[in-house]
Length: 273
Image 1: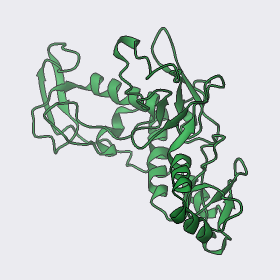
Image 2 (image 1 turned 90 degrees about the vertical axis):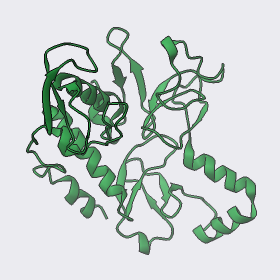
Image 3 (image 1 turned 180 degrees about the vertical axis):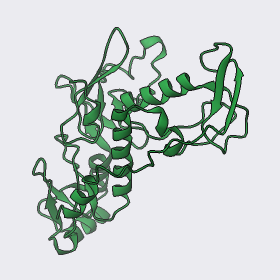
């Protein structure tokens, strides 16, 4: 079952993106639009950017590296407000250290795996974060078991196994029962805050996998001067990883994220311990 998955992961000598760095399409001397320092070498990362070079290499490096470290992001847009170009990994890869290169490779591999009809993430409410290729899914009775946490899961619906119903019966019941359809939406898009004194259900439809126990959901939760009330007393403000429910705390001195992801989670490499 796992051979195809293992073969992909074991290609450690083959990066998902090339190791060769590309030349900067444009360079000039000037004032960086991000740090405002003068007499710097300004560059563009993408040849599709039509504007003149406006950002220095250290600012590009710091911005991209910090976003990978904190959010596990691998998709970056040009910081210029009039430009909507999305950088290819090959265009920023050479700015990263060895650890971040390896992490981006894994993130890109996971995105590639997600396009395979046999791949599924564990959807256990306990918070697992593992993923696997279920190569025998056509021979299943509807469910398979997560290799990491042993939770029975439904292959068709990508939720915990609906005990007592076959997949066809479950679809029929869902069609006839609006309450069950609503429950399925909750199962698919909602998880409980990992703070044991809170446990508020949080819904996610889009955005990165860094969540906040807040009515706004993601890390962009209107934290104006750290005074966001997170939508009221029902929300505690705890940050956590959506994939595995690992808590994410903030270093009070540096502002850096302190992650505690499950060892099976795709973001475990970002843990600080």
